[in-house]
Image (cartoon, rainbow, N blue to C red; front, side, top):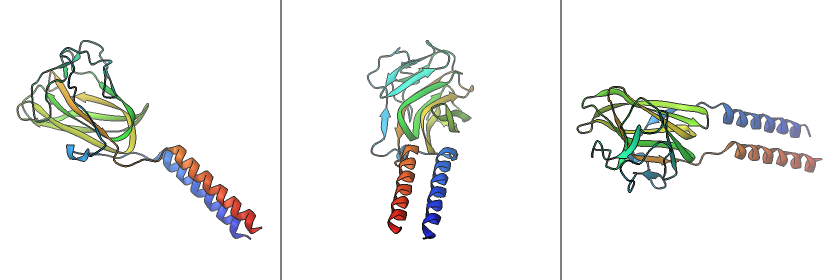
Length: 217
């Protein structure tokens, strides 16, 4: 008879631990390559968009773009031409490149990546930085060094997080007076249980323990 209350207390404690883990876990991020984006991932390559299309406020492939410095600074264009990770048309800055390029995503993901270039021809540390957010909550960030790719400095910047996110901010080094972005990839490596799922699991566990206690009596 005494074992049932102890089991109930254990279930309640486990439920609390699950809720605490869901609300307080801190994310870890690590760099990934193009090969990490397998079946089910999405690719936005800006194909078919006309040169001169304003990027601030642009919605394409489910991605919503915003530039912190407003209109007239980032457009769809052919520059800098083809690199190992960029093929026209692509996003390119024509005004002040020191702003923040924000991408709002249509759903929660844990993998993000893009090809980039800056107007430079030598190795540049911290050539671009990716910052991740779940709504307004920061999830994590990572900086990427650029190298000639093959002429303009750039490469592929890919990030994976142990927590899901739905907003990304990109900034670029002042070592280049212009930047370009192309081939934006998004994906979800494994299904991530939402807090509501954990609540349902805990509720079901408590209900089952309650039924077992009544049956014992």
